[in-house]
Image (cartoon, rainbow, N blue to C red):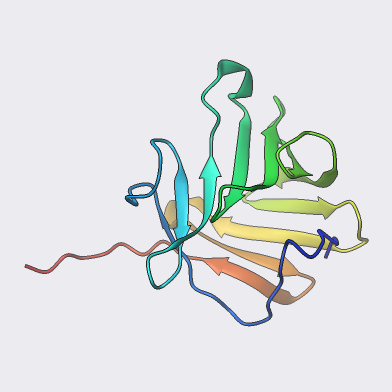
Amino acid sequence: MANLGPEYPYSPIPVDLFVSKKHRGLSRGDLGFADASGRIVFRVNRPSSKSSANKLVLLDATGKPLISMHRHDDGSWEGYKGGEQKDLIFRVKKAETDLEVFLLDSTSELKVKGCPSMKSCTIYKGNDILAQADFVEYIHQF
């Protein structure tokens, strides 16, 4: 894994995060990742200016930019440490329904395999599963 520094903690213990666009603490257009207590842990922000139409920023709970991601015309993405387009940490290109992620500080690669129609994906490093995401539709009972 690329060394992103001490401000990017890593834990081998799985943590469930719930993804929502409608959390009360989010601005319009933001995507939030909340823990089991409902606290926003991460937020993805899409800057509103037209010059930033292909840019996303991953923010921590305090609003500090962790990673800025830029989409290119060919569909590939580049990720930079923080909010500026300075310290490149990864590149992503699409291959069928899989994504190949190339970390710049490492010889290892990540594979993201997913099913867009099921809104799910799994992230692998070699044969090890690093993360999984599955869409869960809540059924409200009255």
